[in-house]
Amino acid sequence: MSKFVFSEWPPTLSEAQLEALTLYSTTYALSHGLLYLPAVKPQPLIPNSSIHAPLSVFPSPFPSRLFSLARRLQSTYNILYARIAMDVEFLDNVMGAIDGVGKVDDFVGQLWTGWKNLRVDGEMPLQLGLFRSDYLLHAGSDGEPPSLKQVEFNTISSSFGPLSERTAALHRYLYAATSYYNVSPHIKIENFPPNNTTTGLVEGLAAAHAAHSVKEAKILFVVQAGERNVFDQRWLEYELLEKHSIRVIRQTFDQLAVSASVDPTTRALSVGGTEISTVYFRAGYTPTDYPTAAHYETRFLLERSNAINCPSIPLQLAGGKKVQQVLTQPGVLERFLHDVSAAQIAELRASWMGMWGLDEEAGVQKARNMAQRLVLKPQREGGGNNVYKEAIPVFLDALPPLERQAWIAMELIVPPEGTGNYLLRAGSEGAQNAVRVDVVSELGIFGWALFGGPNRGIEEKEVGWLVRTKGKDSNEGGVATGFSVLDSLLLVDD
Image 1 (cartoon, rainbow, N blue to C red):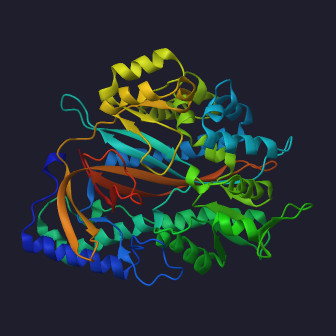
Image 2: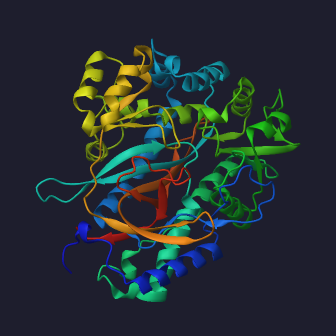
Image 3: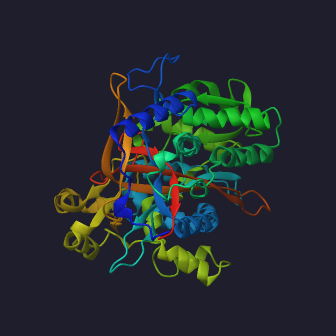
């Protein structure tokens, strides 16, 4: 077979073929729980309708060698971020140094200060991380094949594992039902990699539950009010119950302010009288989740307990963009990966773009000079927070010098040109429209790590993947925020 050409994707479809694939896709999604709640406010307490999640019609091509690399890197990343979360001195230096992030970013500062006040000397609580490392393809120069570059590493609310598994199953179904009308020799069943992310993520939650060792305890999902992406979370809940006999309680911060308590002697966490083994945060990653001081106090109550937090506050702080940037400095990576081979460290470093802080004038001036090739990132998750290219100089003009510490500059990843797909979203009146656009696809690799506690090492595993695809002119990548659609992989040789 000839070498894959990204600019020739997707294959051409007739109008009738596209219409048939659209019908197959939407009915499969609606039949198999690949769903969102509709965009209505307020969301009814008991849902009475749903829509299919935003989808791609074709899977997106991805070099098999780079998919293997991304999976191989995940275990190293699992260990790295677990060790960062346990290194109090390192996090304090990043968050609390003179003009550190925690002192100029109120959200980060609230979390860091609260965690600092909760610490018990010599105690390292057991922690769980459900991680996702996100990557883009970076176009090679002079005909060289693309490389793998990391966008960010997520340590809180790493979502879309179950829905990504169902999207991969959708694309396998389309192949089984239609062979995609034989429009491409690259579309073969062996090029669809398996995706068992739901089982993998639940395995991490179940391991934490077992480590807590109170059989009758439940797992608490901390969720946002009016959550539209509820089905992605529910699939984890169903798997916990059906495969591990573990029950789940779902509550918002507002509900927990009334229902949650911690025993002053045992530090056992109870919600409505039921003991909690593990606290899984699908909220708490954005300042809007903490509209009052009382919401932070609820978070600190959960952290104070002996329940295993996923993530703990230090692990959430470890996922900040400033930490990502500090890791690129000489010797920092080696501090945490002293027992990892030089070849593995080199692979990790090769997956990074250039990054630097804006805490010194030289870094600010460099950002001005290179603005067209940069993105500026704050310490935020969830999409819609970054500043790109031509907007950077004006933004820097308005950014108070004291707040620069909370931002980093990162060289933009340049994906291969000309790759397209058909994107499918539910219309406002239920109409379905598949639109062909030039796209960029982002690969996420999931992993988990259970660590901390007395005399315990790091138990970790790489457990699955997702793909999110967006129009190439969109700077942001969030599915829940409306920028991207869910996708899957077609492995190719480049």
